[in-house]
Image (cartoon, rainbow, N blue to C red; front, side, top):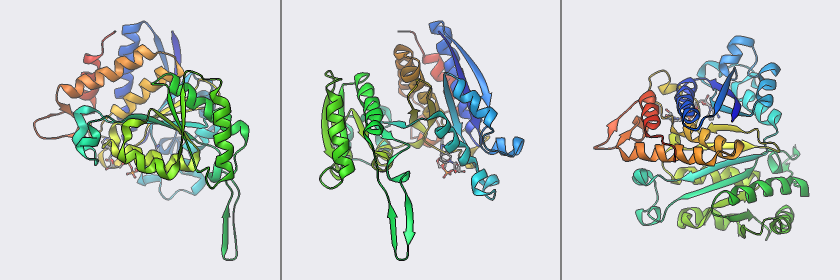
Length: 355
Ligand code: NAD
């Protein structure tokens, strides 16, 4: 297959972690006979320096026309004093809106080799943590009317059927590609919008008879994520609940440098990026952990390009690399061998095998 990937290196450690990831994608292409064409896109601080704009229209157009977008990270102290609408992060928001990616998918997975890094009890971690939160990204209370009148402030939480249906479908389809268990999280004992959410999810479930749908109230879900995370396969929820739960879920896996994410809309053209920022404190030192970005590329293969086998091969290669006792500085522990960003990618490439 031939796929055109828009590549945004961005700022700080962005270029290092993205270059490392392209090495892994090149190896996948070699092994499986694919062609990945990369188009470089300027976004973030580097685009402000070059064009005076964090995401020029011409760059956004190239992203929208690509088969998918791979992003490192943007931002840094250098651009802290530019006006709000010109900040590097504005480029990211414009990219998400321009691509229409309404579904943010963030996996919470603990690698058995790194189980000591989790703040949870060993007995809980031993049962495994491997689930995905599918979060509605461009609706709900963050996008409703916000107003303050006198001593009263109001934020409107509104969802309509089609907004719930489109994120619900992503939840079901994600579950179909995993263990076929979908947990819909809401607050239907209190909120009308949640009662509508629940009703729509159950109507949709008839179209996905192979997926087992369950409901959970958000307060209970927050508790269950730390009490028994092994019970979850895919969680689907609205914007604000997902924002909070996905941060909670990423923490229980222990390391920010290891976690990927995907954002998808109504087409297969998705945005794939690690969950961390541009880490200016370690930029240019070849010590960043590229695994979150490499696993984001694996998500791109699985969810946008339907290359499940190739994605699994990357995940297995990461696992073998960890098994061999290599660690970047952020996850280093006694008895392990310290490696830099480039070496980490080389080792993952060496472990990449066609099934
Ligand atoms: P950060 O995620 O960049 O860094 C937090 C800490 O984690 C730092 O100590 C950093 O060294 C470490 N870290 C992050 N990623 C790592 C990796 N791959 N390997 C090893 N260590 C890693 O968060 P921050 O310091 O609050 O933000 C720095 C800049 O990034 C800011 O300008 C912020 O606005 C921006 N940011 C961008 C995005 C994005 O592009 N999506 C997301 C969050 C923050």
